[in-house]
Length: 263
Image (cartoon, rainbow, N blue to C red):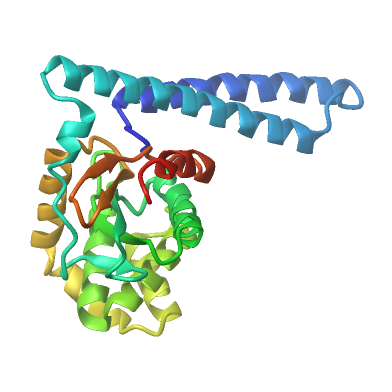
């Protein structure tokens, strides 16, 4: 996610949610006694911002711990990142396929931090127009998101049946629909929205037709240091040099990283 989504993060979020629920009960008690001292819409915003700050703190700590562990094992995060497979004609590429630099993302359709990066990546491509393309490699983490492998299969089926542009349109729709829908309903809705052959895509996903592609992305990602999604790397396509990304960080943070790398 960001970095990384260890089980401790999940527990921490559950704990934070419990604390916030208790706070809401307290405020609810106040409301029964008279006018609220804090407007409800403002309270909602403060709760959401507080959760964002808390999750960001946990993610930063997890990233630092991961880097420390790799260093203790004799390899830095940057060294591990050099194993990322180079862009190829098999990749799902958005933008100029011949761009001198690529963002390579290992992603999970049900990961909220991947959804955030899905908005960040186009902004980076605009900022570095003509210099940077975006490569999406499916990396579903089934333990956290049970429906993610099926969605990844469906996306690979769309790419095979409808082509690269349809893959990106379909991916956009999947993310917009959110994770609460039944996965087949979600696939059918996204496919029909882009006028793809939904029945054929569902049949292809049900058969696990492109599971080999997803398995390869998972192996390659893990070998390159991906422990959570989005696993992001920026590569100089001329020299082969790879810089590890910042997971689900915001656009400003990525621009600061790229400023010293993209010429």
